[in-house]
Length: 282
Length: 282
Image (tube, rainbow over all chains, first blue to last red; front, side, top):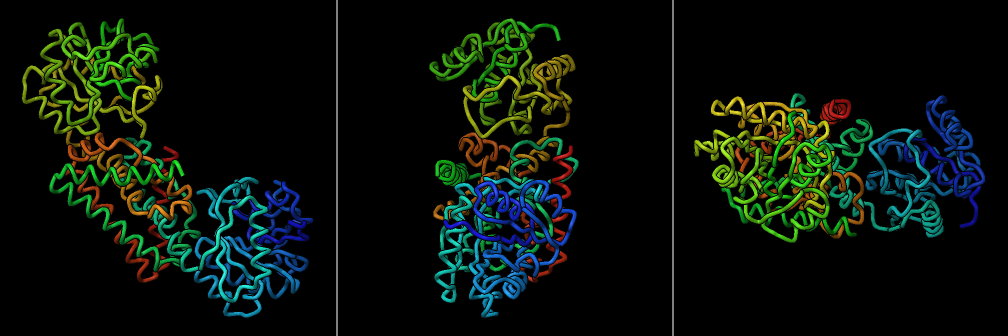
């Protein structure tokens, strides 16, 4: 990839910070500007080396940018795309890192100018931790990044988005925004909802007798409330469908338990075990 | 604790092997005998240093034992207690490591001789891995071990069981078998069932887009099918109750999603997050 001029990152948290670190470590951009609402956090991000400089003024931050990456919570992405498009040079590529895509892409494309410079993206990487302090330059290494172009996406912007996310270490895939949301409802949003359901179900006074299964099964329930409230709302249709599938599967297990049907319990577990093995070996 | 004479371990897998390793590393017994069905695996356990010698004859293995620890799957424990009691010296302590206790304790106490030497135990430690090859001498360090005495349990055997499990590194607790099963249904059996439900629900072709939440949420679904089929069957009453609680909690979340009720989604996640934080800091 040709070296980028200024890259502006809107929202310098775990994802935005890791993008900044990766860009700077790999010397992919001449300058990385961080845009945020909290000047102290931006100063910290500069000290941590995740960005070259920070500003609380979005229009100033994107003014000279060849690429703008929106890393704010999903319910703010579309608005930040629109504002960035207005303030950035005409040739800009705007992309994002939101975990749900259909609503964002639809909202962005309601504004023809935004739609013309935007390519929706979702790097499938992260952590239950927050903030640039947990950023890692290798967070995206070998991880999938789903681009969600539409018929309105410009071919040159799509090519530049592919180059950009590949340069960060991602394996780039492409699919429609709705397809992305259907899949991620199962592979990410459902596991998060289940972790919270489990954490909310086990009485606190019994936690001293919880072990590895509880610990791992609830780990992501430690993630940020606002972030996940926004993701669940953005993708509630597909997530409800995934929850129904999960409940069907639990119902089968409950029936086998109620009837003490050894063969069915065994088969139910074995199917799950084999699928899990495919993930481990995949 | 006074040094033990011979300790016999019935079932030299992950748990039995780790008990053997801990006994031998801490020099707690003059001899550790492993009893199993597969001579080659027993030879391997001797080579790994988890036992001093192995035998496929239970009666021979327990003949000189001052303590017998039954580490076979839960559906075989009661029968192995009975057989060990018949072949071991009259002064023997028989204890076990089963993850569900009420059915085992009831079955053992149907035989007065077995009931007189037995103290049910559940060291809350483990792994989704199987076999003595994964045994660790420190598996029990600081972990809870629940003893489940009943009015029929002899005071001297209870004292010796406390000493035995404490010497292995466990924090020893006591409660009734039914109370144990009710709690473990929530803290262990429910998380295992959910991990398998999740692994069974996510379509295999979408696994390339699964990340940390799926990985951790399904980890224990890799555990052994026969082992978990037996545990689920032994504790199906309390587990069904725990599954109902979980489903109630999921139903609340689904309703909040369907009505796009931001405050309820936020509150639902926040409650879970706070409980998970109590576990992390506990």
